[in-house]
Image 1: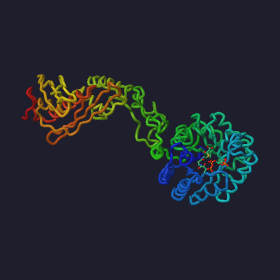
Image 2: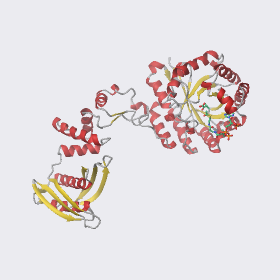
Image 3: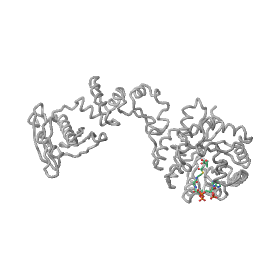
Image 4: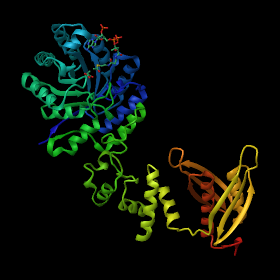
Length: 515
Ligand SMILES: CC(=O)SCCNC(=O)CCNC(=O)[C@H](O)C(C)(C)COP(=O)(O)OP(=O)(O)OC[C@H]1O[C@@H](n2cnc3c(N)ncnc32)[C@H](O)[C@@H]1OP(=O)(O)O
Ligand SMILES: CC(C)C(=O)C(=O)O
């Protein structure tokens, strides 16, 4: 029998405490609606005493978002609790979450209160909240750094006063998995009335251990995990919702827990939170990072193409991603290369594939990622699907601030070298005019673009041109470290496509003629 774990989402409260994040009411409402679709059990919508905007956002969420419990945070003071209730009272299932710190360091320096005063405040606060709602959560802030005997005393008294959820925070992310697990087990063992409340944990990620600590707590008797989408939150953030949920899901046979989360909504939720908070997701972030389901190296790609589970412990569809991603780069191998070419509609012989693969590896050495356009260009260039009736032989440019740009160009036309010169508005224009003189085709330049394929002083320039001939547009590409040469190659590439496509055009060594 699997045990239910409650997912308490604090993206809109602790998550919004991430430096630089400020969500407006509309944005919070949109995230809350998505969290409801995701299937979280509790949404902590905000801290209503913090500002009028936070109050309004919590109220709007309480009134409009159906399904999950809607919680509002409050310090233990009556004024905070009254304000929290005012904001959350219209929810289908409202919860007041109140807290006070119990560690020596917080009590002495921050609160300037004695243990007795904190204990009394905790009891009074819970009782005050309880006047409003039966659903009251209490957190002894900095719980993990608190004296265990005193912590257990406060927890027992809070439950006695009516708290229905007890949340143990590792406020500063100081715990390690073994000791946090034992800590939770100790609380379970020492607090006599602990069974009257749901035991929850709230871990921070200062040492990168929030998810591991939360899992260790679950194994040792915690029933609720507080977490935030993409792990956002104060400082290094909170337990990442998607990580803890997918760990429980993927390793269900080991943990034996289940959640209400509709995992297929994870990716969409993560994207929404990232775009509305303006917090980008690091590419190698577990579960939702751009690379989490991407494979770059040949051995892995080969394995995944033969059987996905060789290198994937989760199916990307489970988090709402359409498919994994085979990224072609310098570590890729022949299997992945061939597969992608086939997807693009190219069926090559083994000899052609060998040729194209060598060219691909050369380009991959210079370029981070090989795109479909690159592959098309490689196949067209290397496999010579388009016969090269015109071939660039040589090029000379005369240009500067006080000279008319002039190009002299040599093109091999059907094995006969022809040369022409032309002036233009710039060196590229001069080159195109000289090529036109040789080719003799009526074309109109519709598009010209130049991209740096690599960085640095020796960057490769990739030129793309679109030439209109009669009613059709033909694309040509050329790559070179010299952008004028890349332009000439692109132009000639497009001309070769025209004569290949138009069977009525014949190329003679004097140029083109229409038959
Ligand atoms: C661990 C956590 O994440 S807790 C949540 C943290 N989140 C936030 O603080 C965000 C929202 N906070 C705010 O907008 C403001 O801090 C407010 C509105 C809550 C309070 O603002 P101010 O009244 O100006 O106080 P300020 O923030 O400067 O100081 C906090 C005060 O609350 C007290 N306090 C802190 N925790 C508690 C608590 N759980 N119960 C009662 N009092 C508390 C502090 O001792 C301090 O009191 P003091 O003014 O008597 O010294
Ligand atoms: C309010 C509590 C739960 C908190 O955010 C923390 O201790 O980190």
